[in-house]
Length: 497
Ligand code: ADP
Image (cartoon, rainbow, N blue to C red; front, top):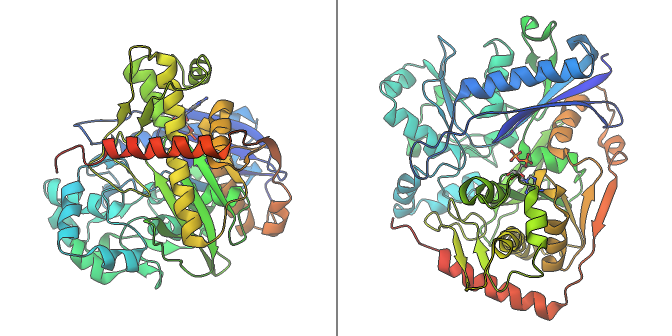
């Protein structure tokens, strides 16, 4: 057996490949950004070929960096940006249009139409999801209705749909395998979380031919192998999980009640809720955590659309920082926000508010407000959104949060994590390996081929790097949370439907 596991981490802004050893240590990491396409306000697209070529290139780069050949790799695991919707032609293997990215809001009115037919409860009980343009179903319907000739081809069985994992498996296997895993399938708005299959009633409502859809597999099994021509020799593809579920696995949240929060482009809090789906009364999503060894674990998830991307906006939109990491020093240049609140609703609000028509707001600006105050308010805005989700999760699960395990690119920011601990009133814990998303994918692949023997072995690999203890008193915390709620109110229903 090969001595290493390779994780392919196909994120919203970049593709990465990471080589792990048995101790979960990173041996090599290669990363490539790819273009974000914004054709109109509220639209976000990716070129599927750019996703694929960047992902294939970083595999080559990572192997070269570690001085390895494909034969040294026991298996590869895939983790990916979820919900992003790609349709390709089965004959040519080419995408029929750009992929519609999870952040894209173009189907908001289509979703309103479903809500107007009182279908919210049908979708919630079958899929565990809230009706929102976020998920793949409405995006797929849009492509079929708007790309010339797509619907006829789909009816004739000539097209294939996939989320990014599925697209990568298709490309990696040279077009041999059209399959996805349950953690991705359950984010499409077409998957029934109780029958664990595509739901025919929903396919009918959305007018999606079943022939488009991939086969649904577990998160940890051999799906196929990479085309030998790609990387020198064939590598078994043995793990697939959506990025947030993979991070939850990579953080060893195997027990009911354990959870993590990831600070990447968006923020995603996921809590393992055990072997049956738990309904949310607070607008959280009920989702499959993973299926492994024939057993399905479920989770509650709070999805926040804008977190790290708010920092990108400070950099690219406002130009008040040069690199994302500059935000920490700028925010530290002031002792507080000067009562400025920033609601990061740049693409609407996700959990627990779910307002497609909210937009970002900066309130409380006065003559003395500086870039430092805005930067600090941005970090607080990210942390307040997380606090709203934590409150909803505690209320749904009846389990009070005792500490928050965190990961993702923005957790390099110590000030952000200190603010988070202060606003939550519980410690925030950063692990030694913050590449937990890729690690989760590696674990799924490694478990499938016997590289690791059991999750217990994995639990032992988790190590704390730093713990941020809360220092704010409850009175101040509550005062700020109340101001935040007022600011959220200002951002809601801003765009006319
Ligand atoms: P994704 O997987 O969603 O592409 P990552 O986990 O790689 O995201 O994190 C990248 C995000 O983190 C970017 O949006 C970036 O702006 C943000 N980020 C990176 N470093 C920092 C920092 N020091 N402080 C705040 N945000 C940061």
